[in-house]
Length: 573
Image 1 (cartoon, rainbow, N blue to C red):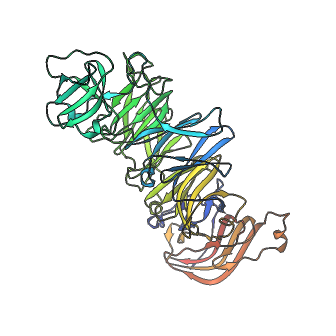
Image 2 (image 1 turned 120 degrees about the vertical axis):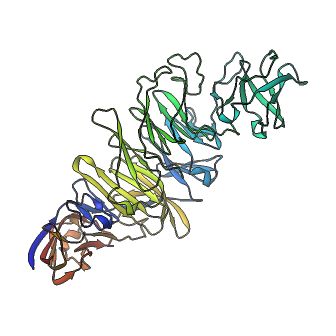
Image 3 (image 1 turned 30 degrees about the vertical axis):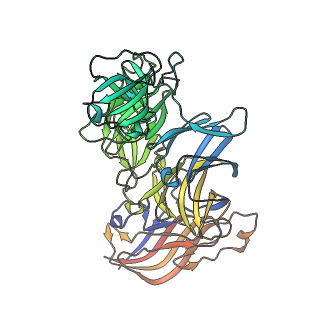
């Protein structure tokens, strides 16, 4: 048997999947739970959770920053929106979305206004009053022209209407009314209150008569056409056609991406006039409409404003790089073919200048970033070594201050990525609590979560001063090594005689099931804990082919930081 001393002083790869246990050059672990990998590569026990409030029911978290020092956390629940400020309930508003609908609500913020979209509901606007210390929510409205009261909303010709012609006849209700007769069955009751553009005028459908006939109204006189009209369009959004699926602001334009009936459409407002989607005569500041063209059906999942306008679909990633973006200059290109998650909205996160999103299969966390020439995007997989930790994601958030990406899973756990590319850190771990994580969001550098505990739903946040959850639930942590490899070989048998660990500001720690004895003077309030080397003697302990050599663990409510671990022993290959 050959003698060895092996030190692991970086855990930068975090927990890796078993198929990578025999790969050289990985500073990984076979298990990492309730611990974080620091920028130095060291391990540290995660923070505890502080209780904020009991919630009426489950919800989804999002943050709203109105101004410097005025930060809000929003809980979207079942037909309600609870708004918290300074960890106190500030206001409760009624919304049109059920709890099941909330999973597909997307949003964009500009100053003190946030606009929400859902493919089955009219967009909603949340705004903070300048004179009253309160919020109001109302249906988003397109701007109107004072002269004829037409609405500056987009109009399109849908595929199922491409062969439909409309015969226009007078109606007994008055000179501003007409009967529209379609050349084949087309109209539905959902067309009532929808708008059409026909005979160079906007019309509102006021009455449904049959699948071929409706009554419509226009503001002003019109001339009856001598033959059926083939050149007509419908409002892009409405009860029948659906509403925008995604939203962002880009180059001072409001951008809507996709809808139920036009999944590949991108609508951009006029510059600085976010309620005006009139394309006008194509001037540089007027509205823009484009449709993604490819050999596959492209359903836009979300739109993201970065240096370029990124359009993430179910089958690929597009970008519009035009600067400035004008109707006559739209440089759009499909860069990658990964596809985004469609089961629910998981907001893309900005991490180190890249857009990080969940792939369509729910198993990858992709990093969309430009190449060195800033011409083409790549979509690198951030969890290539840790696929086993990606299990049906239901929410995502990134804390830039802590450099941590949080993925809530449907099994009630969280997968957490500690990322610092400059220092070579890309480490996944698992967070577990006495209950189930349901949602996550970051506000004012605090990471908030919704947790179900013993049937109750709580709003909580991670607090670096706590080492217990909600001041009553203790949680255990563990970091376990990879199986032993030496001189490029998988050890057939390993006998360990001693394990050393170098710790920093630590008050309680176990090594391989043995409590480490620390000096008594570290438990005074004047000290942060013990810093130095600790060890255990386990002479003659045998380890198998796939077992971890060492594991650090504990459940005391005390801080723990592990800088390195060394093992002394013999091995045989």
